[in-house]
Image (cartoon, rainbow, N blue to C red):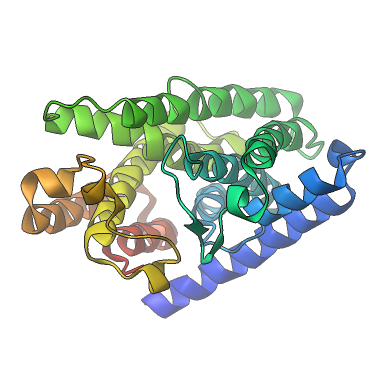
Length: 299
């Protein structure tokens, strides 16, 4: 599969996810009675474009095991709510203090800080509500997904990683410390996305573990590529500010080892991903192409 074909698939899933989210935020019982301003802020934070990579990984991982595509899409949309909540909070002045996200004003700039905090809170809880309300999945599958998501999005996962990032010590961090922080902050939700596809399909534990490992590798590659783009990318094409990490003295693997090491490491991670998914043969071609896209992307 060439990159243009993959980007077409990504775009198709992104549009489908956007449609699901637009419907949920427009008429679902989970948002009935939401104050108008809050609902608008939620929409601003989650319906603002983006590659929708995490939902795409849910959909493609589920497809690997023949799971129901509509159910996978719904889980992907719920995950996007939680991912978007994290971005809204990450952009706040107390965190990264960003004015731009996906080429648009961040939620606290378009509205205000209090509204942005509450919009993030609302999207977080909405994501869990969407999983719990999915009657197309058996109750035991929904329970597994909610428990997984709570761990990966919470203190042992993304939130814990954010804490490590915010509380970065003044001493020079080791590669192990940086990797741990990034695996939690970025990798946890990507690992959930890949494992969730296997869970939706009620696949055996061995497959769940394999897809989880693939997601962990993908998460490491995503963050490393993101760090490189922050150093060398263009704010207009990326839709967000660049050069932030260096300006704030934030430590990254690419800064620690240099650009050449980072590029070689990305190639090695692609190789690891290929080994992990080798048992699935050609059925895993799209997931592997997505991994290459993550590692070698230019925006």
